Image 1 (cartoon, helix red, strand yellow):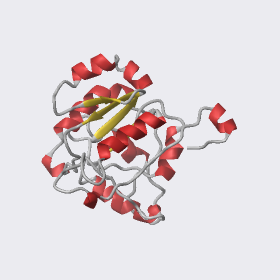
Image 2 (cartoon, one colour):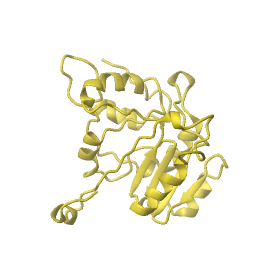
Image 3 (cartoon, helix red, strand yellow):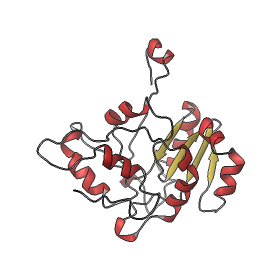
Length: 214
């Protein structure tokens, strides 16, 4: 978040991520109690003038995250709603991105992406369902898919609200990606470029995710 001036001049992006333990929330009360996550998230977007972002269920991997990547992929293949995101990998991706990364419970669109999608009014018209509230944070919009995040087990099919948001924001999703995983050590499966691409398109249509392995 504090880049040297020479990097800032070249247009580098910074990346801010935080995890909140699920056990601080009770009975699905995500917006109230000890940690009202909505208020915190919108405050972050407003103060940082967020260019893009997302929020939902995610894995808080240990420091040596590469040891756990095979398990990360296995869980991702079982749940559509599980966000796959490691700062060490994401930072190597976003400097060359020309679009947003992902759709989840919250999908954050900075003003340039809002304009590319036809503006505030057009997005609200395309997502007029009351279960898809849209919040203006001053430098863009935050779209929330339902009152609470979904793990969305693959066995139950694609989550409709996430799909609805994806259908609207897909034109501004990046296609310039790298692998979200490290290289395999002994033939174990991890995210690679092919699997990363399939995962990012998982809400586009049935049958894309989970992948089939050669």
